[in-house]
Image (cartoon, rainbow, N blue to C red):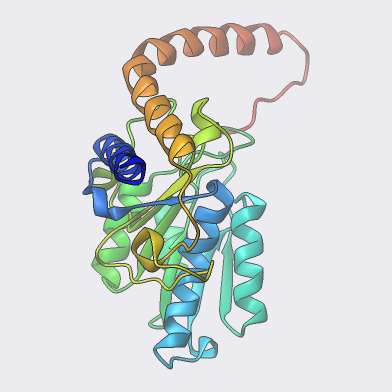
Length: 256
């Protein structure tokens, strides 16, 4: 009976997270955090390609140069495995432009990874425009985003963003540490990186932590309710802070 109740609680948490993302519950994979979600998205795709008999030396991957190390180190592993990785730079505003992404695309490109909101300077990338442009040029290319910093301030509706893979961390939403999630669209096929049992659609082995998943989902729902009021409060603080800082001669505020 306790096992049945635990399963119900886990699936209820999955439904809550899916509701916030505007996706189906089965498209939500629970992980141990944002780092593992990023690893699963990137290295899981590489492992799937290898499982299908494709050699990574024939694949091309694109990542922005301003990603968190959880993403950059995953692509460093792709390179060690033989994949070709292109790092693209932002402009002077900190923006990864659509034109820069399109210029880097090749016929053999399999994945583009661009963080939604930068964890250092807060710049929000134009994911929707990037997604639309990628699909027009090569609809087979998948788009991944480390969205860890964004959901506190922006509604993370995956279909509006046009992403195929979206990584989230509970601790970024003031939820419990040690749990995260990966949104996985039906366009994206991955192989598990953590090997063992068949939990999480056979993509993330190991007994699920029901308490952490429930805390994550509860925090996500709470954030959604507070998002608009928090945006207004923090915008006021940000603008006041910037106004005072700009009194310092020669000071420059970076980012869009």
